[in-house]
Amino acid sequence: MADATWLIESMGILALIILLGIAVLWKTLKEKKSGFPITDERTQRINGKAAYYALFMGQYFTIAIVLVMLVGREFLGMPEIEAGYPLIASLLVSSLSYLALRWHFGRKGEV
Image 1 (cartoon, rainbow, N blue to C red):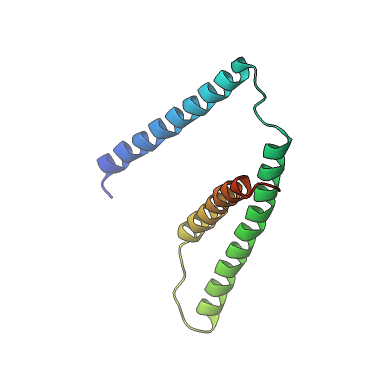
Image 2: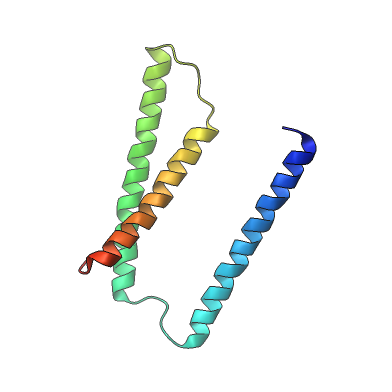
């Protein structure tokens, strides 16, 4: 990748991270000032249960990636895989499973 292109993309990513941080901070402060509790018992239970299951889903996915890479390299002659892509995939699986489980448990009713 060209140096100028990488610099522009890096600045865009940094700006996006800063904007998301400001939006989250603004929303949190707005909810605090409204006087309503940010989380109640049901929401805490839903978030806890979703996080519990998402943690294990991410760990099992990471273990599966490691086993596939190990077996593929040692027994099937596959080339080494760069570490960045499996790490990104594992992070995405963990994050998206947390969001999906939180949505599912929130719609389910009784947790």
